Length: 430
Image (cartoon, rainbow, N blue to C red; front, side, top):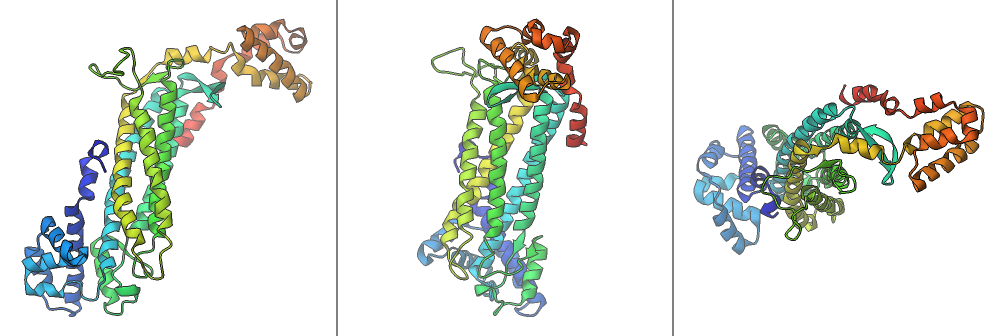
């Protein structure tokens, strides 16, 4: 992952140092259990814990010769810890270490992503309540539909990210498994109690049944959740981009004092951060498909999934972390223009009240189809000739016979559209 879109906390999780540290933790935990059950001599785990140091360069140098990362790691540890280190890895297979370690890295990453989501939820809740009754136009197909409030829009995002948090918690739980079951997963050369001890020590659950690997449907679920969260990021980002367009300009990304928007046009203030998030969301979603393809492996194990996970493991988590933090900052610092929202709300001369006029006509005794045609005719004239719909309806003899001028004026009031905002907010925020 390139440093431009990376934060140190996640980069550290996916560093070689952290990976090998987890491998060592797994081997030490397994050795402790083997000592407990008198499978290996006492004192092995203590010596390895004391003398075994992570030397990344040395491991890589050995791997160049042996062409096997776990063997290179074990050789490096043995060089430091001495002859007793030969008891490490008794009855275990490489995937016991690799898969358990990979899951731990996913759990570590997932827990940071949860904190990122918490920040977004906090910002959205605060902003939603601030703009709870700030009128703006609701749009469908990009066209003015009916009035809503900006707070309601933000509350919608809050509810979505609350669901995302629950999804991610479930995905972390799904991936929190450990396999120390040996070649093809039969425990032929290792006591199942070793796995129980390692799982408990590392705060994982023993895998229900492994082949030689932890089944990849678990990982596919985790990465699928990351893809869904990326979709939510893009949804919010796309809305910010639309609302910052010159023709709309209801809000704006924060623009610092010395910031430049264009090398050619000094007036430009572009939604570059939201556009960036749209691109990053595409990247995170692109990692879902190979994760799904990793589910089907040959027999009890092959390594076609390995190269995929070496890429998507760090990239998906690091990118999503960066994107979530950036989105939180955008939402926290965005500039909102309530007056422009109101101006845009009035832009279409009251046609946003067309539904209520139609319903009123049906209550006066005419069919829905006829009421629709009468209102639609006036609404089209209002848009084409830039005339207020209320004035057209008042002057329409057929309509004015059925609905009085006073009744029509009572329809053309924004406040009525917000009568259930408190109810919706109560459902969202409790």
